[in-house]
Each structure stands twice: as C-alpha cells, then as structure tokens.
Image 1: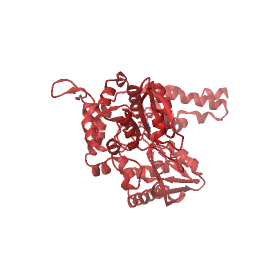
Image 2: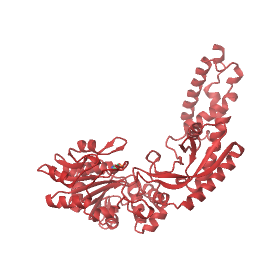
Image 3: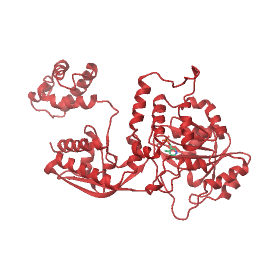
Image 4: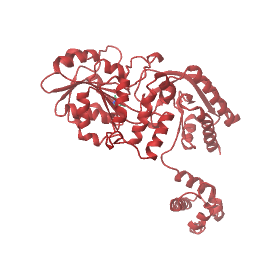
Length: 468
Ligand SMILES: *Cc1c(COP(=O)(O)O)cnc(C)c1O
C-alpha cells in the first residue's frame, strides 16, 4: 500500500493536465491548486482505505475525469441560480420574488454608474435617498408619508422603537406570530424596548379586551398579520375599523404589520380575505409596514407608510442608519412600484403577480410543454404524466389558499422519488422539485418558459448520474 502513495501524480503534473481543460484553464491558478491538493488528500485517504489496487489507477490520466468533476463543482460560485419546480411562488429559501425586467435594468444602471442616490438635482446639494420612492408610495397607497428600510423585520422593529420604547403596545394573543427564521413578534418587541401587553385569547379577542388594557403606559394598539397560519372555528378578531375607533377615543396610534402586503387586489383571483395596503390605509391605520419581496414582487425591503407625524419621527430615529436601504434596492423598488401605476401592467410584468394569477389554461399548456421536454430528454427510461394539483403563494401569504394548476409527474424505473430529488440538487443548474404522496412532481407555475428545457436537461443529468 505504501508503494501506491508514490504513484500519486505530483500537483504540478496534475495542474498541467488540468490547464488544457476547458472551463478549468480560465480559473484562478491558486484556487485550482488548492482544490488539487484537496483532491490528492482524498486519494490518499482512499489508498489507506484500500480503494485502489494498482498503480495504473492513480495516473494523472486515470484520475482526470473525477478530478475534473471535483474541481468544476468546487470552483463554482457558492451563490447560484436554481430552477424552482416547487410551485411555491414566494419561496423564502429560494430567494423570494423575481424582479421584473425593468427592475433588473434599473439595478444594473444604479450599480454601474454614479447616481443621484442622495443628491438633489434641483439644488445641487445633499438630498434624501427616501425621496425616490416616497411620492410614488403615497400615490399608490393613499398614505401621507412613506419610508423604506432593509426589510419588514427592520420596519417592525423601528416602528416599535420609535413609537413605543419604554411603554406598552397592546396586541391580541391570536396575533403573536412567529414568521420563521426566528422572527417572533414578542421577541422583536422586547428588543425594541417596547413592552408587550397581550390581550384576549388565542382564538378570540374582543374590543373590550383592548379597551380594558389601555392605561397611562399605553403607546399604541398593534395588529399583526397572522401570515402563515389560520385560526378556524370559534374565533373573533377585532377589525381595523373597531381599532380605529378605540385609537381615536384614547388618542393612540394604530399600527399594523401587514407581513406580505399587497398593492394589487387579489380578490378577483379567489384569494379573498387579504386587504390591500390601500384599503388598510383608507380604513385608518396610522402606520403600516410590509415586505418589498413578498406579494409586492420587488427587492428585499421593508416599506412603512402612514401618517406624516409618525413617519417623520421614524425617519429621524438614528437606528434608521443601521437598517437603511441600499441604492440597488431603491432602484429596483422604484422600477417595481412604477409598474403598479397601472394595475394591469403590474399583473402582467411583475413575475410574482404573474405567477400567482396564471390561468389554469396557461399552466396546463406549460405543463404539456414541460412533459414533452422531459419525455424527450429521458426517453424510454421514464414515465411522464400530468395531473391536477396545487401550488402555493408562499412567503406567509394566503396560507389557506391552494392555487389550482397542472403538475408534471415523473417516475424513472429503479430510482426512488427521493433519490431523484436529491440528485437534482447537484445538476447544473440545480432543480428543486416536490414529492407528494411518494410521487415526484414538477410544478410548472414557478418555471419560466425558457426554463422548461433546462429543467428537462437537469432531469437527464440527474438520471445519468444515478444510473452510471
Ligand atoms: C414576512 C413577515 C415579516 C418579516 O418580513 P421580512 O421582509 O422577511 O423581514 C414580518 N411580519 C410578518 C407578519 C411577516 O409575514
């Protein structure tokens, strides 16, 4: 065995072989050298484990295919594009919303050039970065003032810190939500310095519960969107209108964390029960916050709209500097918001809205094209079918609504669905699929038209890897 170690090629020998291989010769040499060393260490481990028996297996030429694959896969950028065949439109783990074409262009323009990011072109003096989106947010939502920060978690935090630090905020026990990724309303409240005053029961909260809790210490009444769950059965929530009446009676602001927040009314799509931001503002919420990259379909951001007296105080909070929005985000957000000046245009051009509102016929036709492409790339090896199924909005929106559509089912002889799904995470680009009732599914809703061929090709790569 010790003899075999001596037959391992030297790093230089391996490098000269790799130097001629396309896709590797262009990589930074120090990076490739490190990876070659790692690979040779793995070979030494394997020799120790008795995986090699003859010197010939250890020549640079014999090791070349594995080595090339190793270097290729390790040298790729860590942040990568994936194909989303899960049907979850706002998939937080897969990057949430895709930007509209005009927003992508705006980002490129903003980061490749100098800009009036904080420069007032009418005076030649320092300007405010919020000026770019404040007016359009007010025009669309009907609010008096607006502000944007890094994300909605930051928006909730800074609202509470500004308006309620050291005092009490009254929230229904039915709305003390955890969003995931450790964002919990009670915890954010503690960190903001505001004190949570819980009222009501998990399933029922009444106006008098809020009213009985109001005292000298009360700073605000708060509503939180129960984004990712529903309480059903014997339930009662106090409406925004009722909260407004209380707020007026006791001189308290009503603040609302809308979570996803939508500017486009999805009521027509059968997605009822979700008020638009415009409606929430019109019903008298004083300060409302929502995410930029959930149903709005823009970049990661936290949008705060509401009454000027409160928004101005939030703007002056020094914490604002720590949660401020960057110029690429601002550019993408403004471009996205401009699409909402015409709601029909927003539905067509904002990918998130477009995917949520896709018609059953369009989805069926996309499923047919996907099934065809998969049949073509897998041939005899697979059984490919279509069946009715459901997609999800995701992002903690519309938790109880299934979006009906057509799924593509794939079954490959000798390969369990879980194995196929696992192998697809290692294709180029990786594909994330779904398994339901032990069946492997591709949901075409979240695949772009130009991605159908890529998805079929990924399946071929995965099946090849599993059967070689
Ligand atoms: C998603 C969500 C948040 C957090 O928003 P981010 O933009 O992810 O920071 C806060 N509150 C509610 C109710 C949410 O649904």
